[in-house]
Length: 306
Image (cartoon, rainbow, N blue to C red; front, side, top):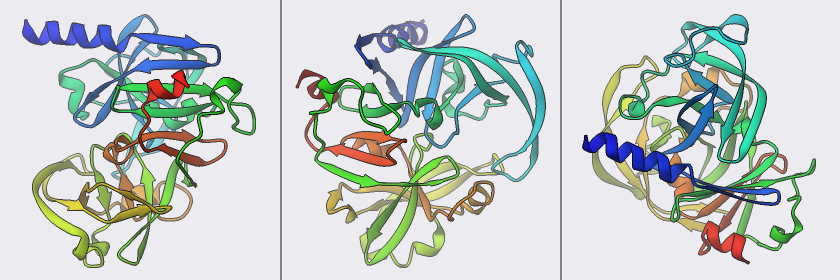
């Protein structure tokens, strides 16, 4: 009963959305460092995980296995290297006041997702869903701002163009995933931004180079590319700098991501920056400009109020 009541309260809070001209303000719910957005898809209400490691909208086969509005089935190679059957369909999606119609989406088995046994996880909201917006994340107020942009990535509503960020740095793409070049201990790392990862991951070969910035932080269970759970050492990584901005210590695990690199085009990544990295400050991702913006002290509410 308590769990049912709690879920009801969470869904109610997550549905609170405000719209100002070309700007939408969406409340989200954070669970185990994952960002859950209340969504409505084909009459079903539940949650989507905001996952910048996913290309676009991916639906959970548990809820969308009726082949309604389907086009063709296809085969795809998963992160574990195995060939998997994927259902392709078109659907309508609503997150807060934002709607996407006739959205091309894939339907796959997502039962391995940790929150799926507690919350109805309808699927993943991938990064390319937000290509027409500057996506602002503020964990202090559990708020997402979606600023509509023009073809060059400039904010359409001039009222918000005056909200100058404190730090801005460019990113490149590994397939669909934005990645940054991070410098630590005279070591340069290419790290992808993946809000679908609760913690950050780094290739094991860099552990010796970063040892002066590592502090042991216990153990953690990780879901491997073969879908098995493995016990792995957890570390706190200190002295991380991006464009002269020093970040607070970051939780990391050292694990092989070669399978991940093999299925995406572009330069090999040295690791993944999980949700914790983006939660340190108010952070924006602008896909058209290929830039990440950071406000050190401002929350999302302050950006709208200015």
